Amino acid sequence: MEKYLEVETIEQVVNIFGNFDQNIKILENHYNVQVVHRGIQLKISGEEENALLAQRAILALIRLTAKGEPITEQTVRYVISLVDDDQDDQIPFFGGDFVAITAKGKPIKPKTIGQKLYVDAIKNNVITFGIGPAGTGKTYLAVAMAVNALKNKDVSRIIITRPAVEAGEKLGFLPGDLQNKVDPYLRPLHDALYDMLGVETYQRYVERGVIEVAPLAYMRGRTLDDSYIILDEAQNTTQEQMKMFLTRIGFGSRAIVTGDITQVDLPEGKKSGLKEVMHILKNIDGIAFTILNEKDVVRHPLVQAIVKAYERSDARRSAKQGEKSADRRGKDGK
Image (cartoon, rainbow, N blue to C red; front, side, top):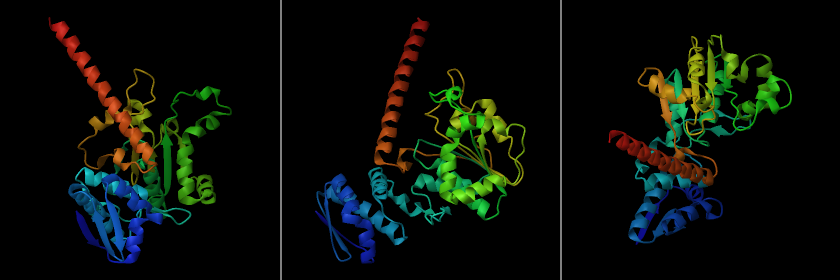
């Protein structure tokens, strides 16, 4: 079967095909089709079902490039996943306005539908929870939103914190004083701020107290007005720490809480404050929960595959535990 499509400009064709046709090769390999272009006309050749799916994927890419979106390999893989799950009708909602501009002039904007929902939730709520696996942009987008609010003078300072929970390593064995020991835990936050502001601007803001990056324990006893507050790695908070953090929020402030509930590093027997708060604060006006998944991973494609593999493993483990519990209940009932 052959399908024909037309693009508005040759520049859009180049955007869709990518350098050395790397974008279109991903689509061809996935659907086992051939895609060629003559000027602004595209021809898709292959088995009927595959050609129809490839046509839908290319139509989605055409809609994105018409909106000025750069088409990357990650974009193509994401669009393919939406088509395969029959969700390509959501493509018009993908992307959106710039969240911020980095120090090097690179625009930051949502790269998936999940990220778009996350950014919209941050804009429209006082407290937003971004929950999902590594690589979904939870922290980076939160920092971008905070920096944008600071530049627009919507807030007067940014406070970013995370619990200094040991993940296999022992804090006591690290050299230096307490600040030196917790700095490695805060490094990802420093890196995101460097990217957004540049090292010199960031350091100047820190010296003036406009930006503060500190362990969660430093938040106790404070009331944070007119601030953008980010709690990162929140899955490693206890119930008490989560309550303490949320009750720091003062007038004119917004808070973003990010975490991955599949990567809890708390000691055995300690409940994650993030897991608990998902039940305690649901359905409260002004508080939003955005759940991101492996489709929202914007790192190397292998990261998405790793996340999926762990999810399958966790599902099998939960099923086995459920079977064991059922067996025990059956024996107890005899």
